[in-house]
Length: 288
Image 1 (tube, rainbow, N blue to C red):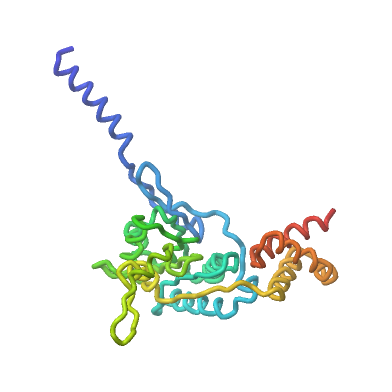
Image 2: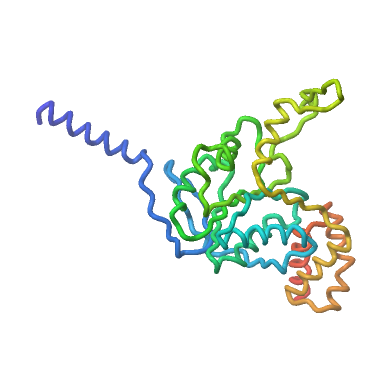
């Protein structure tokens, strides 16, 4: 073998090794595989992974959040009907139904063409790719970012700002962003931020650049929906709903009230999530 042949053989082997490290072309999404998808990264390239089993939550399952439910459902109805609708930020107390409400809307309107794409915070930089992927589809897509919060300097923060209202390109008509967060402004708020406020001679307060930056992202959502902690009576109503869902009768629901309150006390929360967890435990033990 000549030196040239040896060189070409080694070069070909090197190219093969390099090709294994490069992002591979992703397969087209299987749009018929389900109503919900997750954005996943493999070898540096993103793709849509179908969600085979969606949580069967219904709008009627969500108790004591009537005003919030109506706002989100109305906005979603407008969206699936092709009318103007807003990106939505759902904030407030944990376990009060923010994520469940979005899943319930998907179940309610999937037959009308609604689809959902769940995107992790770390993958928000891929939002332009996701929008391009679905822009030509006839379905209506909600990009769902759950439990969203940022620290200073994270790349996803600016990517989401641009996707909401900051890019030279218009947002696709068949895409909305629904995000949930326990933080109203999506970033930590510190005492030192107050030092950036200034006031003029008339006493008017003006936020400094630090505060302006922290509120600028949440302001780009057209609809803000706030959820509040449940009162004791509301919590017990939710417990009763889920106990009946799991097959308990009215006498069992009444007998469970004390245990339900102790369960909530142990967890330091009277949330809908805690009510659902108690109902699963109580109804399961009732079968012994």
